[in-house]
Length: 433
Image (tube, rainbow, N blue to C red; front, side, top):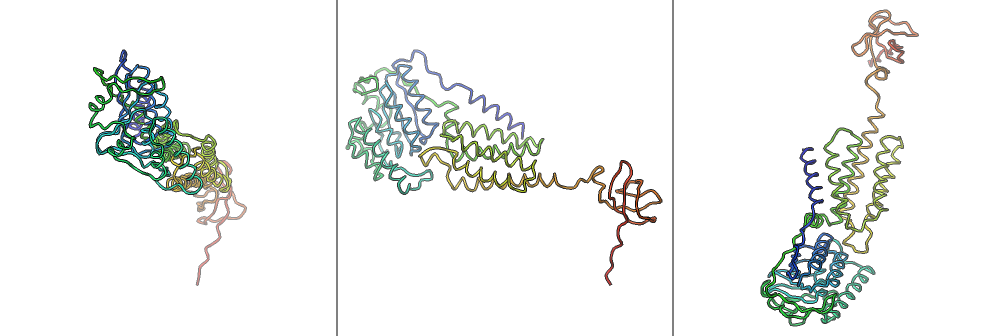
């Protein structure tokens, strides 16, 4: 099993080091299609931003973002919106195939696009902000989140010549619109059954881009499908702060167990793999170095508990540092970029019990009386064999005593001097009548 995990780790590192999809040389004039069928997270944001940059570098004539998303992180959505607004190539956000949706954060991608299209039986909207577990954000924080996203939706709608009131309704009232209604209200510019219909409808259309107004020419153009690389796929999988936190805890626990019990191997391999995945996941999340330092300090305190007799004070300090570090681990006003309490509390308590339990067992082992060597003889019982010798633990030892002893008398070792022991007679057992 350890060998399999080691090979898996090496394969993972090679995959992460491998470059993403190469940009075709001499591909000017191509139509780039970016399929975004995922939640809005750091991985999907990285994938879209890289795709738009590569399309611009390849002088693409058009970028079609084929969208199907339930929404996701506000911070990642803002990165995508900025990339769409800054793209010098005409961008079309196409909600497809039939049954797809562009809800929550996905609605903002539609509002940001110069041209929007929808397939039949699709819908857009329901962009009211919620917490990381889908719960309502209460109080002032909720009001601030709604006000912020309402202003963003209205500004994007005005920029693209769409009705800002409809955009605000999607945020404030969680309004959704099907494809026909969205076309009727001007939120969708084109209704297209498939990609071929869309390209036909786009032919000759004037579009505003970051590089100025351009005319879309799709006749005779080849289509290139931009595919996510290993990094984007793995990052999309690990983009959850909850998963990153759990991996971090597993990694620290595995390494802690390996250092406190050298030679176990398996916990160290699992811990190292989990720690690498955790750091990779946190590479695009807003990590607080203070929170990370507190978690590291907690591990140091738990480890020091094994070496120093603090009577539990180091473990208590480690528990406090671990809880504070877990709460502070991600610095963001976005509730979806924080560790959920339903994950944080049981995970932190489990880690505290694990670290404290390992420290307790290791401490007891260090404080336990030795059962081997000269120290192991102290307090052991034996019997007098003859004048000058006693039997202890199946061995014969020379002895000295300040009291007279008789053959067969039971004795106890009080000191060890080289190859000679000092003994005293054991008092006779009391018998109850």
